[in-house]
Amino acid sequence: MKEVTSKALAIEICKALSDKLGKDIIVLYVREKTDLCDYFVIASGSNAPQIKAMGERVEELVEKNLGLVPSRTEGVRDGRWAVLDYGDVIAHIFNDETRLFYHLERLWTDGGNIEHFNDKTGELYSATPEK
Image (cartoon, rainbow, N blue to C red; front, side, top):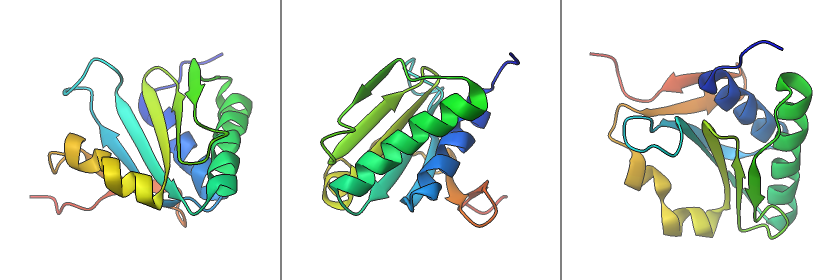
């Protein structure tokens, strides 16, 4: 099996979240801010069944396409805040209210480490203009 980069894993997670109509999917590069992981992938779902479906889709597609399973999952069945830990990449799936409350983007973003997922192209783009 070939080596999977953390960026490729983050993109695969984004695609899986998009499959289940996840909203506001972003990728935060946090390697220089923490030893926990390289990337956080953050997305929102509208309700508990959707959040559960998003978490299950991430597990399904990442295992099918990359041969990886999360080392730990929390909250997927609860539907408020699901966490899937793939080591170098941690996916956070929130309902809208919980995402606003914890606002991980505010805590971890320095302006240059955030990318948004374009569900039409399947690619990441920076919302910050290049200088």
